[in-house]
Length: 420
Image (cartoon, rainbow, N blue to C red; front, side, top):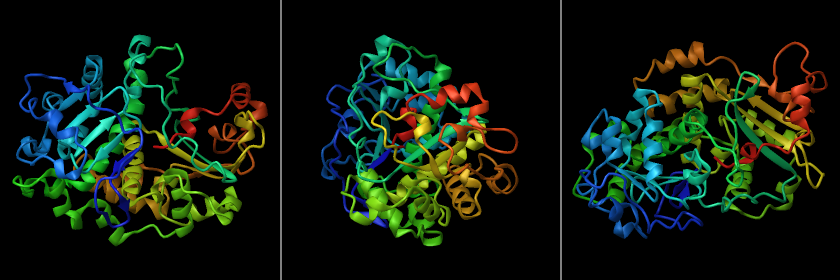
């Protein structure tokens, strides 16, 4: 997911125009009699930073309550369809209760039928959520835009694909559902992917309005000016003063994959194993971390919370781009891959910083990273992405596992190439 600002490492100068960020003309407050219902829409649906509301008009939730409950959060929700608010409220009840504190750094939560991708905006300090994470029925699905993420085809000229997923043991942690399909879901089906999304977007909010600075923010200036006033204390700036990422080559690859820049000849010729070696020798847990320092912090945080609360690991891999016109999973041969990378020595301290800075007190993060987070596991180079669902010792060849063999013949799971 993205931060709507012109973001280079170290700061920005203002909002950027981002394609398909969503037409918000149809949003309304989910609770029409809420404390801030009269100002919500005007403060979240703005075109430029010059329209940013005063913080006194729409304060951060953390200025209203240091320990917000679901009722407090729902007063800040805007939707294009009423079921979106109902579903969001029900899903919040499934989150670990201490994670509700993550909402302290936002002014509002916007859920609209044509928001894609989900994002955070510095001009409003609000998060904007794609309702593809919320639908349960086909009727609800019909309300949601089917337009692809505008970044889908970025990086077509590269010689490798970057893949990632969340796993529980040797299985996918959750299923992927097509907006054009006829399948329906339960609330339990959306809990994990929605949790991941919220951890990511709320990490952005905490980055720019750090929890330890909320009480001292100036309510007499605009939301955007307030965020800029604490730029030196942005959590990603603190992280980069201490433990920056260093690979310039992966910075340039991220610009191709996530910003749509044209790959030069050197980038086009980069092989999967070389790209993997670059990442392994640096402190990132995901290639998206090289897009901006803000995404770096958010990727560290979401992986840490998914591991802490549900014992779910993130898999990442660079695989050679298949030659087949309609490739299946066995065509994606891993050149480098790793599971649970937040446990790697080069990453662990950075992930601990993210968790402790964004959600202090949720657990003893130092103990978690020292003793509980476990160890990273390397994927088997030369085996395909689906075969690498099963890692560790013992017989694990895809040819000996009927379920994996069946999976290998299917097209790759669309979520495995999704931009966070």
